[in-house]
Image (cartoon, rainbow, N blue to C red; front, side):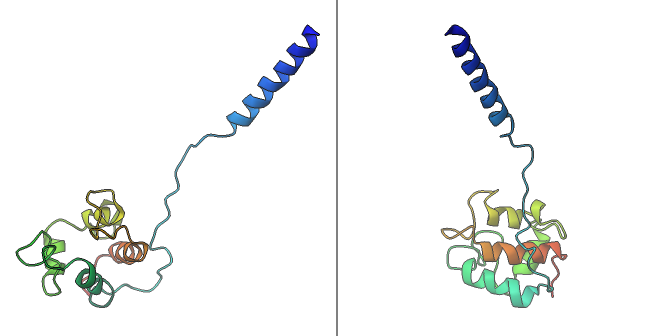
Length: 132
């Protein structure tokens, strides 16, 4: 009887070791949120409307408000001259880090992160953050 219990325990322990040894994480795969965007992003057509609708609101990112100024006429200069962009490197751009929640508070305030906004901004920065 003791041999039978020992054999069952041994089989149980071996099975648990095999099961748990296959359950571990070695890497994290981060999917580029703008990967599906293959057309060139236009700052004027694709990005500025996002800022106008979601950011350049009274008390937020407007002239005299919180930096950067994201009003239509000032946004590109404010972002590029203020150190918020690293053209070609969205993951290390402060603008994108606020959008995806790596910097706090997540933007747009009260609504972010927004997958559609993030994809467009990511693709635009990845494509060189051009003022086009």
